[in-house]
Image (cartoon, rainbow, N blue to C red; front, side, top):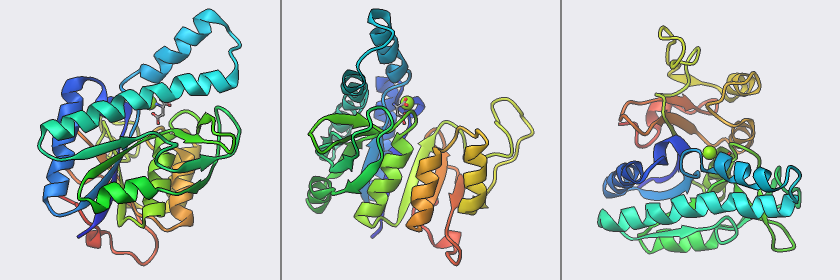
Length: 254
Ligand code: ASP
Ligand code: MG
């Protein structure tokens, strides 16, 4: 049995129909005999909308309050996803960043993860349930909610996968993996079947928006395989694996 961390980005959970679709996919993965821990982003443009609301009140809002505000987005998606998994017939627990054990420094808006202690996530998995953690958020030493920087849910997923000793961290998005150019703009762009961390880091630092840079750095440091793929198809996406690991040996490639 494999332990799989699945991260679903905002475009994969943009509305309640999408959340139901993602829930079915999680249930499928679980019923195929895997343990599944999920990291979820806020629905669609929720984070942007929350920021706009704050800015319409004050163009220089307090950083602590902005983080408190932004963490609300992932609370909505994680609890709706847990409800959708229940509706699809399995038990699921959602956890805030703090409950899931993401401990960060105190840098509001761009906090770094210092440690992940996912006791409650582990307990939910051990009970045979799906565990869902809010992406992009943690808690600092003072107990305040922090956020990891825009697009930070990818990093949450890699960090949770490492802390749980997962077999793979799957990053679900709206394209079939990493392409030689943005397939939404360049129709002749080709999917890259597998790539090493170094080349992926280069692409991420050159502005490829598919994966957050810190997620790749985290995965590289701990040799955690990543699989970037679409939540809208079952095609295999792009595998990012450490030297010496056969991509074909990884779980859930269907
Ligand atoms: N919801 C946050 C953002 O839009 C985090 C993420 O999506 O990864 O930046
Ligand atoms: Mg987002």
